[in-house]
Image (cartoon, rainbow over all chains, first blue to last red; front, side, top):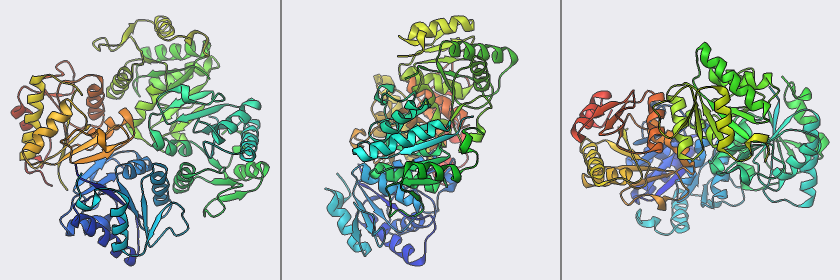
Length: 157
Length: 157
Length: 157
Length: 157
């Protein structure tokens, strides 16, 4: 079984966040970790693009009814038809969640992850949210993500 | 069709919050509004108890597999088997959400409601959460809830 | 807590099935049982109309994003946003399921109910489906439904 | 994006069905198709084992709360926490569904797939179920699956 991490964040994002998300995706892929995300645009797309650049595997847990809504960097579309209720699946499937800037959808995922006791690494964002672990660079986020779960370092169990 | 409002908050709560939740439930029932909640203990139970005291109707959107997990003040148990993903249904079914103190589960419901553009009235809680409407008393919460949606005042559409 | 039964069947139906569904809804309501259904047209609407005629309570577990999609006889709309995955909630919320003629959606509900060991009474339909209990009239269906669960007769536990 | 097919069937199965499921998994993998299944035992495990034997990728859409419930041949565990409601995701994620012998859970998936207009190839089973396409050998099932959707032959779009 592969190790799975989720990257979450806004469906629209600025250039700085795009670069951060790409780096996070890239570094997860370099460690053999499968990237799960919501499958749409913004942070989800940037993280998936970064992961593919490094030869990784990407899964999009889509809210709608068609694989066609996935961004172009998703290898495996999971088509839920559950709308926002799919957020629970994004985080539950992950050993660790890396949260970039986002809005209410992202906040719901952070809250659900914390409720499920899944560690959340907040990268350059969510400073006032208690319960998350903060990081300022993709490297720091990945390092803290690796530390938060046993076995993530090698991408396998 | 009856008007439906959700009351959300911790599954365990202190005496002060219990009293607030009971009052909110009571006052919703007095206005003919159906109370939807997560169906378990703490704020959910107190709000349902208040609603029943005033002769209202209570619905519990349960996370598990049996109606037996509902608190004793739930008239209609909706048994989802969806665990935390049921939080999306609690708020989506409501015209307005009244949030009392709680933890990550409650935060996920607030975030989902705001994402769905359903108004959230925070009663004596969630002061640092942007996007919610604050109230200090049950009366103020009910008044602001009534104002936030057309037609709530009479409990019918 | 009220006793809940589900009535399932096609979203479009003929005159004969409409009359059967109305009678089933009516007789459940007369026994104090809450009617849960999918909230849309056809059998769901006819059963709810029958229940309201007898002063009962009706709940629609809606697949979409708005209470407005409920038929006019639904008291309490539960807005799931889950599309067909809501079928699992319709049957899981019921102590017994009464199935009228329908198509694949109805078949999925019958199968899910049987998987969950919830009794399914098939009224004038589903003759080749093993595992269901057959009835030829609404009266027979109600009688067999009552027998299938303890405590349904009085609509309370 | 990879092409995804679902293999469904009983959580426990006999030797003959095990061999059929393995062959189906193997042949999907040989064509570059990602195997999605419910992630547990019986047909799900046999199909995943066959797919891994041929170097394929396997996804398990799990009903429970932990990746640990996946069978040993699942690469990517999607942890839904939705119990039987996850059946809707298994089939919705697939371009085609191949159904082996099973019981009510499998029947619910067949019905949901047909409702969603996803083609269902029934292999050595489900002879009385209308709407499915029948096949007697894994080869015939794969061939009919390939025909049922454009682009499956090469496993990519």
